[in-house]
Amino acid sequence: MSETQNAAKSTTAADKKFDGFTDEERAAMKEHAQELKKAARRGSRAAKADGERDVLEKIAEMAEADRVLAERVHAVVKASAPALSPKLWYGMPSYAKDGKVVCFFQSAEKFKSRYATFGFNDIANLDEDTMWPTAFALTELTADVEARIAELVKKAVS
View 1 (cartoon, helix red, strand yellow):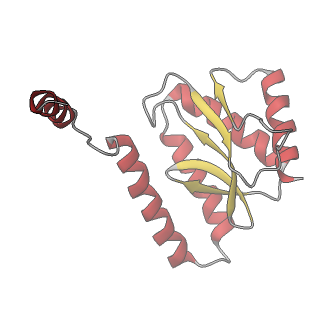
View 2 (cartoon, rainbow, N blue to C red; view 1 turned 60 degrees about the vertical axis):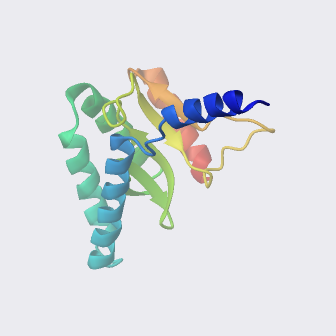
């Protein structure tokens, strides 16, 4: 390869600037660090009640469309798997088993997405063959969607 071609490639590579994490991602990481500090200060006795309060406060802060979805998701998860503990996870409402997040709600606003997301982490017992969904876009919660969420949450903790 000639020096001119090498120079052109390196200039092109230099022009493509990698900024790392987005502002939203950085904010989520800062929120997570604050959540960990707060949990450490509280201790384990108060964690479940305080976690529920934190989740409800976070939901109350959401824009109306996200808040309506999050409130219903919260109710469905609590009814389907009362053993899960609500807690904040990277600034998102989540539900944990033995301290590990099983599922979470991500508002559309959080990462400037066109839809909210309900997702599961790898400890969720959702394995099906060699490929299965772990996150779902939410735009509206119908009775059928709520039933599907309840079914998935029950399976995830089984």
